[in-house]
Image 1: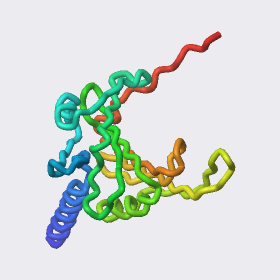
Image 2: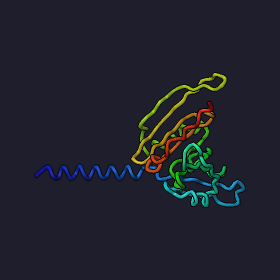
Image 3: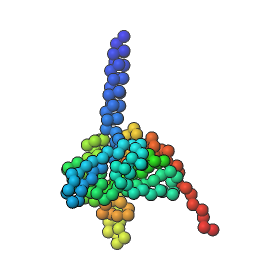
Image 4: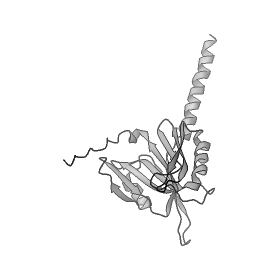
Length: 197
């Protein structure tokens, strides 16, 4: 008879934990637009996972490109004045590329100045806790100069967040990729090329 209340308490704890995880789960991307002339007030748009490409284009004026390597995948670039919104705590620009599978939003990449890495990491930690994976290394530029590198990953029930201190193509900028797994897991394998011989 005493086991039933203990079991009930355990079930309630598990349900509450699941609700907390779902509440912290990334739901999409918040972008803000500032008018360089200052004539219009800034505005924000939240793009939820699964939003149609058509709707996102209407909201943001995206420029889209088909990725021929992946069937059904398109990359769309938010204009320079649209940036990921990390609140008023930073003045750094976080440029965004959004990805759509068969017209549905499932992933985004952010590019930011390397100096904003710690702020970005701390902001994600505050929301999701410590990363589920982390790796430190050293990278070199073309002249052989060495720089510290950090790779971090957070895994939630429906999303995976990757954060890197320095991008391979530009060591002065970091990057972040967020993928919504219920759609991202349906992205087909890349097409294989034909050998030229």
